[in-house]
Length: 152
Image 1: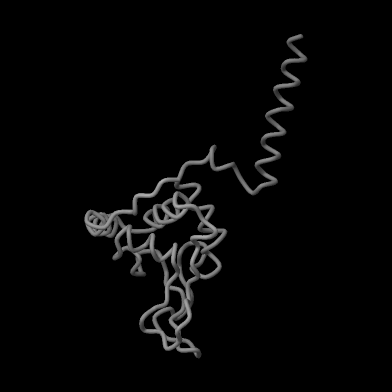
Image 2: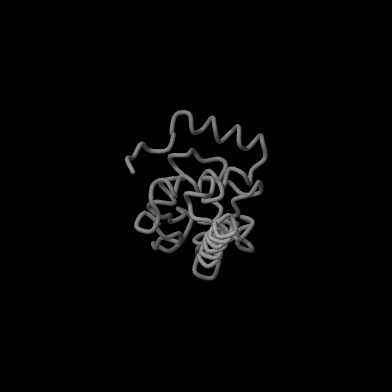
């Protein structure tokens, strides 16, 4: 009986591990919010902002269309200068840099793809890319402009 229990338990564990691997990682109920934020970032953001948040080459200069390429999210960028409320809004509603010569959103809106919690997880993951000084500055900016209160 003990051998049968061990076999069933092992099979269940291996099945769960195989399911997680097939889906690209642990389910969000098994992962921390920062792990979820990183996973979501890699899925939706890294193609433009880079897997390590390095941004596109020449991100500070307009391209041939008159648009600024995707900026880095690490210490060399400026993401850390914005409050939680602003970063949430940018991810949710998209963004058109005011310096762009075109009118289109150069960063798409993700409110129809990501839940409010997932947007917060992505923003909180970005904070791990900053220096301690940048994290402190951003926290101060967010005191008066925190994440929006939303039911989930």
